Every structure is written in C-alpha cells, then in structure tokens.
Length: 118
Image (cartoon, rainbow, N blue to C red):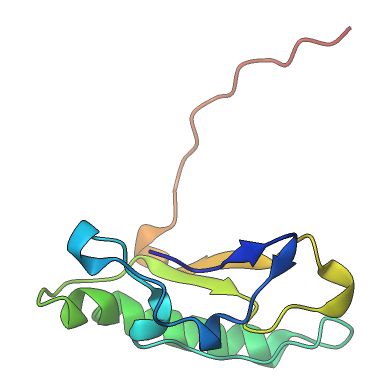
C-alpha cells in the first residue's frame, strides 16, 4: 500500500497522486480508499485530535474499509497517519505514526538482549 511518495527529497501531496498504483501487481494507493483527515496543531493541546483519531480507529477496527473495497471483510488493526501536505521545514522527513485499536495493542513484550556498551 502506497502511503507516501518522495522525489528528490521532497514529500509529495498524496491527494494529487491517487493514480500511482499497480493493482495487477497488488500495489495499491491508500488515496483510492476511504481515508480519514484530522488537523493537528502540535503547538497546542492535541486531546481533541487524539480523541477524533481514536474514534476513526474504532471504526476501522469494526470493519476495515480497504478490505471491504477489495471485496473482503474483517477488522482493521489501525490507521497509518501521514501528512497530506508536508510541512515546509520538514522537506527531507515525513511525519507519520499509527493508531491501533485496543484489541490489537500488545499486552506483553519479549525481553530485549542487553546492548553492548564500549
């Protein structure tokens, strides 16, 4: 699934690139399916945005819109969030993260090997 495209260190506006896909090779573009939009001001309280993202995530957990569009059904694990229009001073990086439904959150972690220190 294509979520972002970078050309010459510039992350492009995915809203204008829905045609970038090769479905015959099972390469799909997220812009051709139901997407969710939230505006987040990282310099202010993000509680309302977080609440809205989790509501959308619960909706996906009940029925995955991508699976449904591809003729299937089932729950969706969560939503990958990326910038639709990149922030000017983050030209070489894209900000992104994933929200997951409670039923897909890990409840335990395997112990990690100790890191060798010089």
